[in-house]
Length: 414
Image (cartoon, rainbow, N blue to C red):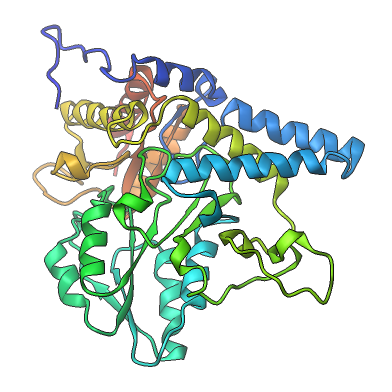
């Protein structure tokens, strides 16, 4: 962690002074009202995304479907930006409602045989466990890899869970409680070496960190846009490696799955791309807004590498927040290995003098309520406060969060 200046004042944020972060902050209306640290839950919209939704509502109310061709063109531009974000090709991208839907396409569409198994860590968000657990009805075993409270994924334990009947290993890029960020390429290499395919739940990483799915060896990926991609809920993306297009039984088929978007009730010619999964009408308002936020991040040079300006700012913000909290005798919980950190950290403090246990969840919930009243937004997950930074958060935001927690701890009794 960075050192304090001799005066005891935190040094200027080394990444947030860069133009990409300043420009992103200028496009976030939320900063006029709140210090927002809840991107791991639901992020605030960018100004361009909010404007796109408002314009859609205006046009739909006054012109009906006349602007539909323009909206459809914007959706295809979103597909292009999403593909560039992932290092994928446009025909490998489907635009979906949420992460759960994308994972479900794989879980339900895969050609399972009785006796097969799928492997997941035991600390996954329900969207990456429930779809696999329901496969028991088809004779598919769900194997859960034990994960320590720190969130560290031990590759040796993962390897032991995989055998000749393992068809898919599905893992979150970033743990939603621990903030532990896996090395995607390393995990994919292990999974492929054992003859299985790799599914990545990318919702807690994409937008903060860049990935090249072709280089990393990801077979399937799903992510909603409402976290670090700063889009609205109900608009996300699904990546399907081209070679697996015919492997999966496509689900949710409808008119928009057909080649040419045919209205012919006798047509059965599916699109030869992942877009065949976009069976019915599109969430136009959501996708238009999603495009604006994703395109903004793209223009701010998210870049092909993890050490892009956005990723650097997210990590630096997490580090500085952790340092300021520790100076005030709070406990912070995030990966000890800096390479595995993300925008997520947990916050706790001792329940009473001389004890090692953290305050109970009820106190954490009361602290969250106090923070919200002070204009600071964060969550409670795993019994602790969870703060999640983005590139546009600055020193003032961090100080507001720390001050709110210090005030709560001084005034709270019981």
